[in-house]
Image 1 (tube, rainbow, N blue to C red):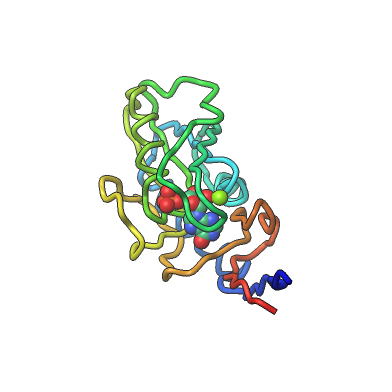
Image 2 (image 1 turned 60 degrees about the vertical axis):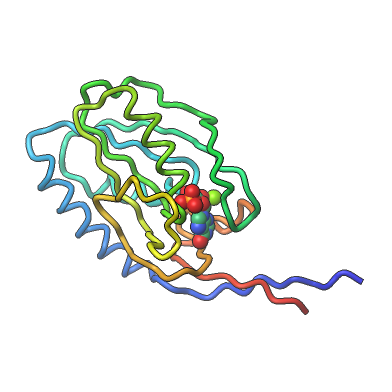
Amino acid sequence: MRPIIKEVVTPMITKEQIDKRLDELARAIEADFTGETLTVVCTLKGAVVFFVDLVKKLNIPLKMDFIEAASYGDAQNSSGIVKINKDLTNTISGEHVLLVEDIIDTGATLSQMVAHLRRQRPQSFKICALLDKPSRRIVHDIQPDYVGFEIEDKFVLGYGLDYLQRYRNLPYIATMKLIEE
Ligand code: IMP
Ligand code: MG
């Protein structure tokens, strides 16, 4: 008989903590781009909730664009092989670009996506990640410029992050464990 697997979800970062941290990130980003127009690039789908909340707090002229890179692997780990499923709509040549990412784990997805975007020669390029798991890093060639929260090596979901495409709509960030029953 196959065991029943239960998904145990435990809240880790509250809505209020996220909101407060996003205010701080927005002030830091505004200070770095005073007098400039910023192109904010959302990585689909994981960063979409974070992106929407962050851009609403940014009091500078900005453009939005979207990119989707899939890193193949199992439900909880990426394989390191990245494919661009959906590319930007507009050129970023000569633009100030801020890439908004959900989470940096091994760094493989981000590294390949950054290499892809930099080929267009933006004037400047910065990275903002909601979550960072530095202890998991394998690819060290890119560093985020802004990080919401540094977390331990735990599988997290909610606020855009998924487990098998579910839980993205949770308004907070939680950890999840699979328990056999
Ligand atoms: P990396 O290429 O190993 O850095 O993996 C980054 C991607 O894997 C993220 O953009 C997420 O889509 C996914 N990922 C990594 N860790 C987690 C997690 O704890 N929860 C949900 N998705 C994750
Ligand atoms: Mg994912």
